[in-house]
Structure formats: C-alpha cells, structure tokens
Amino acid sequence: MDKTSEIDDGISETARTLLRRVFRILQGCGLTTQQLRGISKQALGDVEEIREGHTNRVTARQAFMCSDVVLKWRRDCSFLDDNGLPIQLSPNGAAPSFVELVEATAPGADPAAMLSSMEELGVVRITENKKIELISESVVACSGRDGSMVASEFVLEHICGFLGSVEYNVFDKPSRAKGRFERACYASVPQNLVPVLEHLVSSRGQDFVDVIDEWLARRAVKEVSEDVTVLVGAGAYVFVRKHV
Image (cartoon, rainbow, N blue to C red):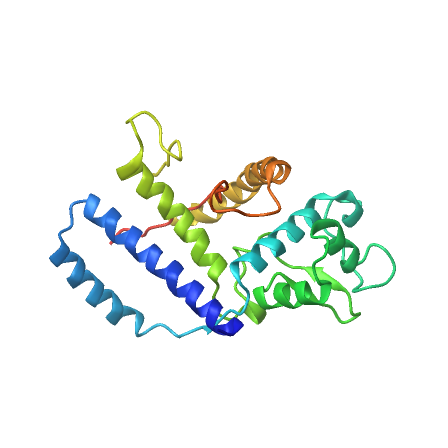
C-alpha cells in the first residue's frame, strides 16, 4: 500500500468515527434511526452545493509535529523579537534558522519535509527575501496553502476529539458528577459583538491552551503504544448560531 492510500484510509476511518459519534449523540438527543436516515440524505444533498476542496497530503502525525514546531516558535525567546512576536527565520543560515527550530523541537525530523508540510497546511509562507514567516498561531486554524480548502486528517482528528468528549459526557461517564469538560456557556447577543467574543476567546483561550500544551509537553512519550498510551488534549471554542 502506497503512502497516498494509507492517508486516504486514515481519513476515511477517522471520518467514519466522526459520523458514528455524531449519530450516537443525535440518538441520545432523541432522534430515531428513521429520522437520522432522512436527515443524512438531506445533508448529503446540501453538501453537493459546496465546492470540493483538495485532499491534504499531510498526515495527522505530521500535523502534530508541525503543531509542536509552531508552539516552540511562538514561545521560545530564541525565536521571538523584542515584542515577543515570532521572527522570520532563514531556511538554513544565520541563527536563528528554521533548521535550528526543527532540530530543537523534533530531533531527527527532516526540516525540508517539515517546511513542505507547514506550507501545505498554510502555517507558514516564504517571503520575498526568502525568509520563512509564521502566519498562523495554530495548525488547526489554518485554511491550507493560499487559503484553499483542505481535508486534513488532523482537522478530522480534532473534531473527533471534541465529539468524543461530548459522547463520553452523554453516554459513558460513570456518574452525573463531572464529565470531560466542565461546562459550556451560551447567550443571545447582538451580532456586532461576535468579533469582540472571538477576540476574547482568542486571547484568553490561547493562554489556556498554551498552559495545557506545556503540561502535555513535559509528559509526552516518544514511543506511542496503544496498550499504555492515549491521545489527550483540550481546546477553547467560539460557537455562533444565527436565530432562524
């Protein structure tokens, strides 16, 4: 099996898990199997009107490694300017360089391959003076190269992780006390306040995620074993739903 087939199989398996969790959660909300079939058919008709995006060739593992590089770039003072912002890096020249960043974050990884993956994800761009510029604070928040649509296995894994927490809360937690997230809050507000909320969550939520990232980085294992390790994470989200 070639690499492309492996990526496609991984995306398909993750997508099946995502849909299974969605359907199970909807059943928990009271929808019948017949209703789910009708909704699914209607939803498939709706997405036929959406422009198809290209399949991202970056695997979930590669995207996680890119995420580690972005985190170090944003936090390590060796790669920040006097204002605490990520500096532009030379590909492989005077320090600090992109090669130096990759070696400090993922020893043994190929910097050229890492750069290619980060360009594909839309995390970085090459400037006119041949420097590498970080243009996104998060791998998950990226829209892909040149803003094009992507179907990233990493994005699917991220959605599956969130839905897995919801599924656990609804069906699998041993008591009514606490679930895998403490609470979510909602309120109807004027639409012009949405950018204010987005900025609030972006700033404070990023601080929260950075703290979790640090905690995870100190405890992460290098060799993943399905018998003794699990993939964990946390996130902060903005929910927007217009009243019909």
